[in-house]
Image (cartoon, rainbow, N blue to C red; front, top):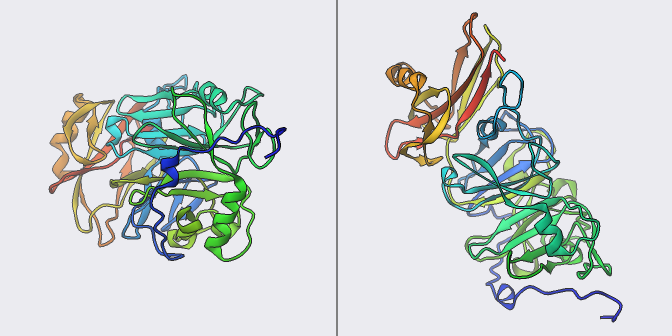
Amino acid sequence: MSASIPHRRRAPAFLALLAALAAAPGVPAQFHVTASTASDSLLAGDPVRDEDLVVRHVNGSTWVHAPAETAAALLEPVGANGSHGVFGDVDAVHDDGAWPIQDGLYLSLVSDEDGFLDGDVLRGGATGFTLFLAEADFIAAAGATDGNVDVDAFHLDPDGRVLFSFAEDEASSFLSGDSPGVLSDGDILVWLPGAGSADVLHLESEIDAFVSQALGSSTTTGEVKSVSRDPGTGDVLFTVQSPTPHDASVFSTAGGGTLVLDEAAWAFGASTEFDALSVSPRTWPGLTTTVADPAAGATGSLELRGAAPSSAHVVLLSGSLGPAQVVLSGWGGLVLGADALFAASLELAPFRTVVTDALGRASIPFTIPAGAVAVDLYVQTAGVASPHPASNPIVLDVAQ
């Protein structure tokens, strides 16, 4: 290496010693995968927005895992009339295996919003979203000289080590990618917060080589869009911007580059690119709505996906979220506030119980009364049979 080229710090040796067990190209991943799309799409016939999280179960089924209305439920109302905002686009996601109510979900956003920066990593749980790592921390760790970075991919190892990538090329005062003094948006970095600066784990040229081997043809990937780890081997998993037929495929560094989940395995109804991806140790029934802000007199429906086939679920309502009233599987607990509306919904539970079809799907129609007043309506479902899986909560801004 020329003396004029800033030092490319290498990752600690133990990372290079992790087992490289290669999967055959195109073999479905043997773990659940949570992702967010770069633009609106369709999944199993249902609409998907770029602010939603979707999941692919290890058994091959897919559904919206946590819609924008779940993030909205965890945010303070922002409208003059008390309505909730929603995150515009999820740019990175990490699931650490804890139940969501135990602050197990991490996000970074495409743009600055709700008081957070696009270079921040947020931690979400029962009480909302808090700042986990600030954009300034990533700037210092990477030596970014322009004082502004956008975190595009994020993964947190159990020992606190962070894997990440930036959305744009960044000049660095002490690190280099393939070009001297420049970190590429196709590089993957590794960093232990509180213990020094970041290192370059994989260059963009190495990512190109991994994908080229996995696909059997020379490929330029353009940009790393997300990063995670194979829970069985520790190998780095990632998604890339191109080629288009594989910008929602999951690749691994194992064996010099393998394809562990083909984009086609998701069966999206339109060409789809991933902005964010994480391995998920568990799933839950996904609750969505066809209309998030129903006016007085409006009709809509709640949609339940990813539940057990032919299983009964009760629909519960509240005017607020709160600490888990009871621990349940799935989302982790019943997090609706114990108010008068919740008490009334409990009494009506026998009349608001739905049974899923053979695919674990159910639709629950609703009509907002013509004289309804403005109210935040929080909704969650719970399985009647053990282990009583709870869905994600959502909020409806009624008559607002």
